[in-house]
Image 1 (cartoon, rainbow, N blue to C red):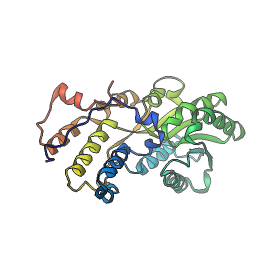
Image 2 (tube, rainbow, N blue to C red):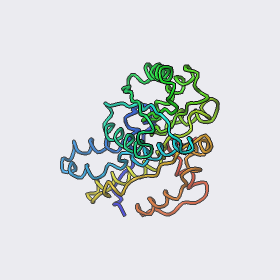
Image 3 (cartoon, rainbow, N blue to C red):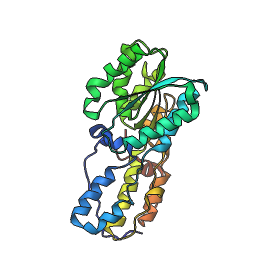
Length: 281
């Protein structure tokens, strides 16, 4: 149990994935921001800070996205456009994972096109870039944005190229509400077939727990053991994912409450405690 001297800090709800797309690479990398503030006040925390980043690179999400594209193609070869953002921290690792998995599943039978659009240019360049690629390369049938925030601009690019009938968008690690909402109505419900979502509320509990451990002078949980779950969001389950608990459940709340020595919740109180942030609707 963590000492009772830890005081929660209230803050206004923030859609971290919208204001900083770089953070979408991690399930809850906002914790690093908290850590840097702590480090400034206590340099001894620096060594521990490398152990308690709780999100990690979403390698499993990369594999799931690629595999889902192959499920959609019924296992047949296809050519794909990968949209990267090289300036995003950790991007090179993600690109390597996507490339390796793509070639491992398809070998020389599939072709991978790659284009790079940096975060500040997403809203001005992705649509035209996607459209140009689809018009110039009729063989492309899958678009793989590395981050779900790119969906908002990739989908209009598919529409502008008049390819909504034979091109799908899959991949995109994030969890932004606008991106998931695209999957609920045409043309997104047939084009945006999958994206990898994390539960920000669950990640927030994990971040708070790790922060409390550090501030209490205790050993944080090793990074490799602190992953929070991801969900492949499709048009079929997008509505449930938007609610949070309908896709991820609420049992995790009582797990963390037990760690803090707090009594378990049930019913409406438990559901409310599991939907306090980004996913609460």
